Length: 517
Image 1 (cartoon, rainbow, N blue to C red):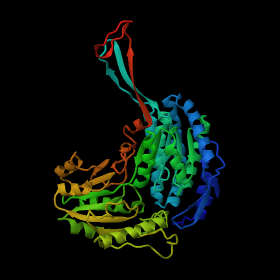
Image 2 (cartoon, rainbow, N blue to C red):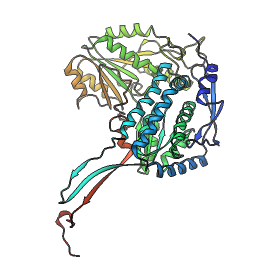
Image 3 (spheres, helix red, strand yellow):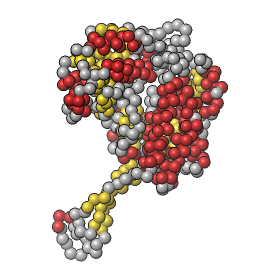
Image 4 (cartoon, one colour):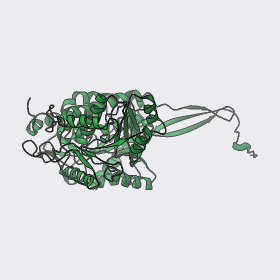
């Protein structure tokens, strides 16, 4: 198989996407600003090489983008929703045309496998398809009035500017989950991508700009601001941004949520996960092991839906551990652009430090290493970002087990009863994704009941990772409570209005009050 290198990307994919060695990271749609902030360099965790650099937004440019977005909203909100949906449909078509190029850039810049990079772009395409249909289904309700010759209904109106702060692990998909819905709802978007993966965002913005130009979309409907945390904080403080969607750590979410809450703004929080799979003695073991391994090591453990804990029935514990050890021994770690490899790198050496620290803490608390971790060295591991997936026998009460470490560390523990398993499952601060592996209907229904999983996502005989576009994505507790993507998540991007219409010739007053005029 051809070895794909930085040089190959620069000469092929980057050229096709319009990404140069130095780029503006600031745009209002078709117009690219100078970017008077600091330069941001993007290094690939695959080989440690500098891919390209970009400029970031200054405070003055931030103000220009806000004002341009405000002006665009006044026009964009008046476009019929199906017409806005047609623009989103064309965005999906453009993404289809650039799927391979953008998918490979996502893979190389973030470190996920090429197949996962393609899958992320496919998620963008899928949410566009969803949003096109949604543009004709922004339904309100009609209600019977208590007053004679009156009628009531509710309708949904655009909010205004939606700020989108995305994380490094999904460089482009998270933006699309928000933006596709926001666009058809009549909102305008300002995107602050992770400064660790700015090139994927720039490439995406150049793709959609082609659609905006062809459809005369107002300048400012979709803006991009590469920057470090300061601009994100400005978005959180800005009263002109009624809704802020934040994907990131719980620590960041708490800070941003407090700032937005202070001004009584709205926030969609997609924060940390500490996801578990309960493996019952009634499980199909082939399915259970496949789900556990993929969930734990996919994207090198850097998904918010990564499987971090296995809660295993004591009767099958030894069998599960034996199977896991056998499978982990077969994992190939290396360049994610090589489809023969299973595990790619962590995003940077800081993430490697966090990985090492987590293992040390687990051991210090009494954890037992079942599959040894460590940093990979030698040829092909020059970036210093490759680590070995690790399995640790632990108690759920360990401080480090209660914490989300963005790395391929899997904690395993035993249980006796389904009630005990669910109690352990829920006894963490996070509440994103969950799963049970069982063919026992009483167990599975208990897991899905009000007494069961406290997560926003609860699955049966499928793992914790791999959410579908059609369902609302998000979690409870310290995961933030927000919902993106499918179902009725669109309502978060609009304001509800209740309307009462009097078609009589009189005005009955509430509570029977009467007065003469």
